[in-house]
Length: 238
Length: 308
Picture 1: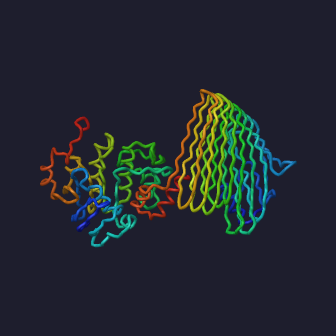
Picture 2 (picture 1 turned 90 degrees about the vertical axis):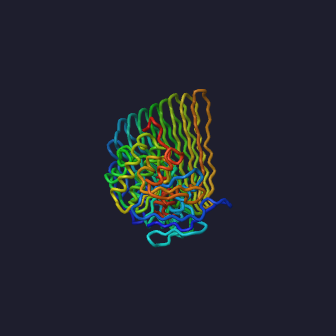
Picture 3 (picture 1 turned 180 degrees about the horizontal axis):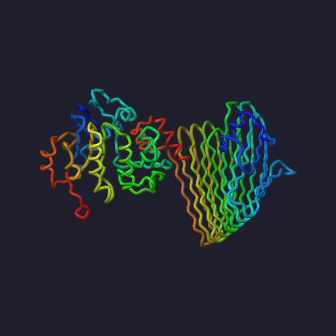
């Protein structure tokens, strides 16, 4: 169980997260939506440890991890997919997957993670994670690194942002598979996409750094449908 | 016969990836003396008469053969200048592995200055790998000042991998190349300096023949209080294409001066240069830390990858 208790965060006097409290039980699929600037990405970074709260607590399975570094949080089972994947000169896809898995990885294991995101290991395993890859490819590799982590809490920051046609159609399938393969796994996704909202157990609406609404999908989704908080994909992509 | 002690064997492993006597032609030099030499049917190695060094003559049409010429220095205070000339015939395809390892546990400076000249025949393809490595905790400096000259005949190709990652206190690397029509040169330099080391790397690549091309790329890391000057110049004197790039990471109090430069003396010369210097991006560290690495491990991975 992941508990966020009275979290606050701000930069140079601007409050971004205000006294936010949120509990996510194990195995839950939660989608966090809300207007731009509402604090969604910041919240994801607070969970991953990339930002540190000014006050409040983060508790994972009963342990207070508020003061844990990024590394310690990763080791306690939190995985994080960046909204903007990071590029590395010299590191190739295989290196990144190997680091993510935290062990020696066989090509066939790497292939498993890559094929899950629709990439052929043969073509990609030796590719450098640099500007020679398209935004969509980087995004898929980013998701593959989270799959390789085999973490108990997976946080995705706008996984649909900047992806191509294939990825979009298959994104929801990836998340559904993640759940199927590991029942106790908690998935937290920051997203505006109605397709992703639609497969959630629970939807959280974040606005002005606070939880505005939280509840089962069937309860919250109808209120959001058609608004900017639950965008439909372009008709041609559907 | 190759007779070497443990330190020398370790140096050989570092600079030439050799665990045993290689197949093909070789020449081992240890503390200024010949430690082993073998010529083959197509590759002849002979000592120079007038000065220190060797001549390596590769016959026309020699394919898929290799030459290893590692040098090790393990005596503190040893200084030498060595002249090695490579005469590569026509239509060859060969691998040449050179490199120098210095272990200096004493208080006197040790220095190896290798002057390598390559004469590459028409249509020949050469891959040249040069690694420099230093070790030992004495106060004596480990100094390497290699000079490499490459003269390329028509339609020849030269791929150079120049690596100096560890332990060399002071280095001035000069590489000069002249390319005739259709010749192609690719240089990948990897440099890392630490402590108070200083490294100067100078390239002067002249594209003299139509259809010649050069791609000179240097990736370097300056740590601690080290200093690097990278001066990569490509001159286009014909219908040619050239690219030069310096890409560097600075850490701690490291300093780098990158001077990629171009000179076009022909209206059809197409030349491009690039340079970038910066510290390791915070988001790169963050990403690897979210994968479970510590900050230090993340830094190592990033640098290893960058210099790979």
